[in-house]
Amino acid sequence: MITYVLNSEKNIFETVFSGLIKPSEILQYMKDVNNNKELPQKLNALLDVRTADFDFEPITMQSIVRENFRMNKSFQMINNAILANDPHDVTLVMFQHYTLGSDKYHVNIFTDREKAEKWLGSW
Image (cartoon, rainbow, N blue to C red):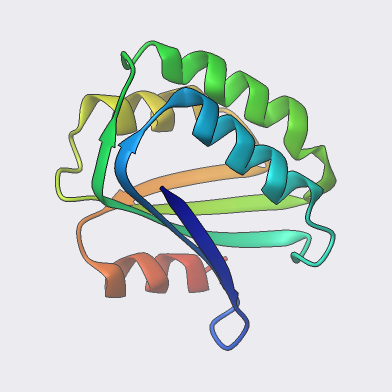
C-alpha cells in the first residue's frame, strides 16, 4: 500500500510504502504525484520504505526511474529523502544510482527521520 500527504508545516511531501509493493503501484503513485497541481514546484519528498517489500528485481528500478523522469517535467526540482531500515538495500541503491547526474532530481537514503528532514530542509 502507498499512502501520502503534504505536510505543509514542514513543506515535506510524506509518503509511506508498506507491505508488498509492485512496480505497477509505484508507477501509479508517480502518475498521481506528477498530476497533482497542488504540490510545490520544488518538491521535498520523504519516502518511508521501512515496512515495504519490493516485489521486483532491482534492475526493474531502471525502467521505473526512466518513467519517473519522463513524467516529472512539471517540477523544477525534486529532493527525495528515502527512509529505510537498510541504506544498502539493493533496490534503493539502484534507485539512487539511476538518478545520479540529474540536475533536478536529488536522492539520499537515511535510517534516521530527523537527519532525512534536515537534509530536505537544506534545499
